[in-house]
Length: 111
Image (cartoon, rainbow, N blue to C red; front, side, top):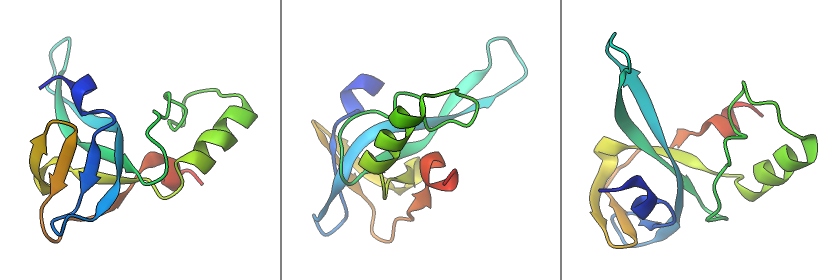
């Protein structure tokens, strides 16, 4: 699977209710080698927008205040879904397992 194919996909829960769209992915760097191995941790789901965070949700990024406010508003309510909570990935559709856990995205954690 290519990550760009996943971005923009509709996300539904086990009952078929639409939760939003995939706007980003989270990885964890593992190993001591150079370069480190990246493992996919989960996806970020935005209930209101299909656009990317453009990297502005990260603390270390210096960002124009107006851009940061606009993206925070567009992506309010966004959440992280761990890869283990994903039941199926299809063409333009991600289905979640029953009783999946909504975890805060960095954007919500920084507010």
